[in-house]
Image (cartoon, rainbow, N blue to C red; front, side):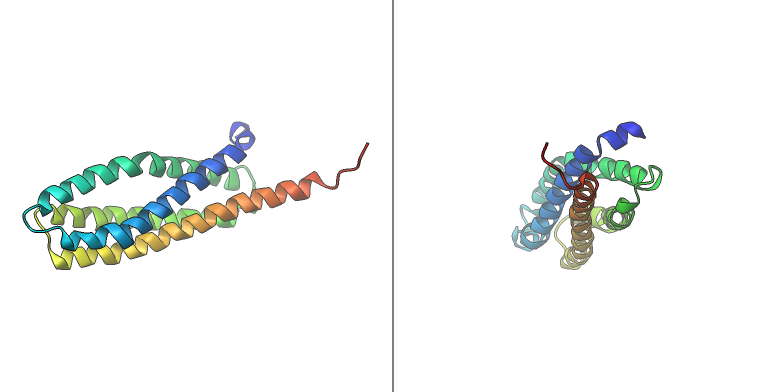
Length: 166
């Protein structure tokens, strides 16, 4: 516990960076990439879908893993380490992360699997709808990550007190 406490600042910064990366990525996918699925063309769609899944998986693996591990560390510090100032934002961050994981596992991944045989407008729309909720959940995570850093910073400022010249 004391090791985690000693590294709270780098933990929060790594969490903030990985979370904001994921927020930007998911909104880029939602606004730019997924809508383009409908314009790929039937003859190349299956190869396109396969490449999308392969490349996006490689791109998000490290930041998503970092986000999850740092969130776990912050949850431990907030609840077991008695860092009450972090409890509400880290709890809400955990809710957002859980929503993103559930949607990814139960809606997005199966939709990509269904689209691997060829484009289907109904499946694509289901993917877009699920991804909107996932994007909003990740936005909640981003807001909470900023909130966590702000909470720690404001606590540090309060605890440092006024300085007097010697």
